[in-house]
Image 1 (tube, helix red, strand yellow):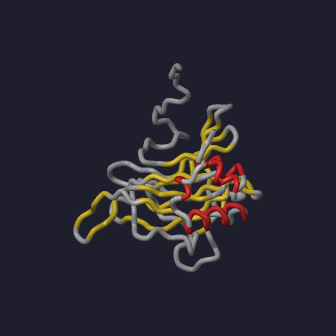
Image 2: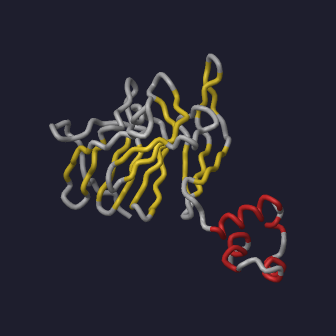
Image 3: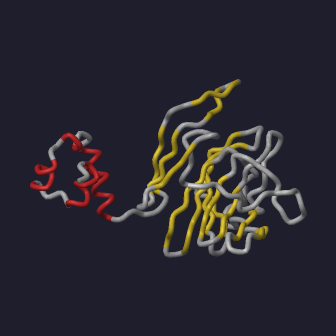
Length: 212
């Protein structure tokens, strides 16, 4: 296992500014840099640097705002957010969660469709409270988990170890049934594998509790 440089910024024209606490989406041979910032400011999400891994070149993309809402048409500049990526029939989609602009924290969730670079605000999917410096991941079926981070508390901020979950796409019926089963029988993992199979639970679901 050997590290080797692919690109080293030199501050020349056509290169994105250095940043931290950004997120990256990968589709094919292209990397999309979403947000991020420095100690003083946060970068716009209406300009997305894209890096081509084959040509080793940068391109700056301008996504489209969400014209279905009146107030906030596009995500505000931010860093310290999280992002997850899923594949859908409409192509790859990236979900940006929370974050901060250095002054305020956000609780919103935005979806970016990579194929047409369209931003959409997830109006019914909102964090329980503003959050930054958190982490998110998503299952192959589209269930997103967000863990930890920093949240505002009156005149200060505090860290937390809370986990939230939300479906960011409509799951398969089998997933809905499995989630209901786990809700009504939270100790199902303590039931022996043979018993679970005997009562008719499909083997691919039993394997989640008792992998072989």
